[in-house]
Amino acid sequence: MAGRAARLVLLAGVAAVASGSQGDREPVYRDCVLQCEERNCSGGALKHFRSRQPIYMSLAGWTCPDDCKYECMWVTVGLYLQEGHKVPQFHGKWPFSRFLFFQEPASAVASFLNGLASLVMLCRYRTSVPASSPMYHTCVAFAWVSLNAWFWSTVFHTRDTDLTEKMDYFCASTVILHSVYLCCVRTVGLQRPAVASAFRALLLLMLTAHVSYLSLIRFDYGYNLAANVATGLVNMVWWLAWCLRNRRRLPHVRKCVAVVLLLQGLSLLELLDFPPLFWVLDAHAIWHISTIPVHVLFFSFLEDDSLYLLKESEAKFKLD
Image (cartoon, rainbow, N blue to C red; front, top):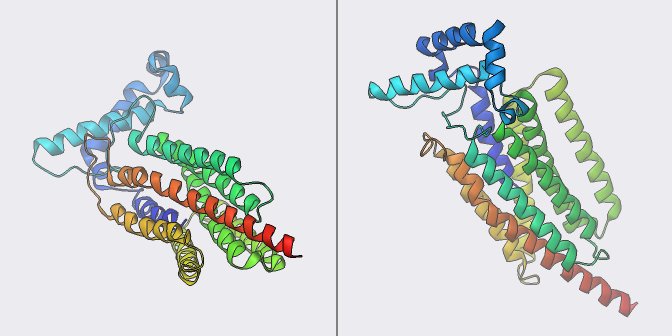
């Protein structure tokens, strides 16, 4: 829901400085990378590197220059710590200790667990809620969109490349827009299907224009941030307004209110920017971990609400 927008705030801030941070501007780092690449990344040395590189590293796309940057990062960090300075960032990120082929192990595992929680709750939803429920197909579609987003989040934190970064951004945007659509269907679309259909077409057009601009014209981090934060705020206000208006008639909306407020509160974790604990656990990873139960709670709300709507529609059918 709106929490994905909070995540994009941090990502945009990271990306804005990714072209140059204190660590990768250091002459010692630049010289180390240059010498490492000259020594290991051409001719016979490159063949030797490839022959001793684990297969899982090559499959994940780790190259000789990438390895040089990783090793030189730790050389630079060691010098900083020896001289009593604070740990610097490199290319907009804190230094993380690589585990197997995982570039950011804690965030990758947390993203996977978020996806797993979404999958488990999707299975539970499909088992508990009949397909005849008015919100069934919209909720199932939202679950698949969320699963796709968490898949790409896992891939991005496993291996940060231009492609995985863009897929992570675009899929996060898709989740926010689909949450807005989900809210539209629940609050307006059940009574006015034509309005929901028109709104869905508008959202698809917005998403297409958004992705096309960022892919084909310019990947503008500032614009991406503004667009997603604005959409996230609309999403948050719309859900809260509907929940507060129906809190007496629908007791289960308290779960939705809790989800919205928790996501906004937990997003403050993103402001705690500190070097990773044990070179693995940073504020972003902690935020990812904290959102796992929130997904469970939101899908529990969707299940309760879908069953309520089913009961209501069956009661109307009997009266007719």
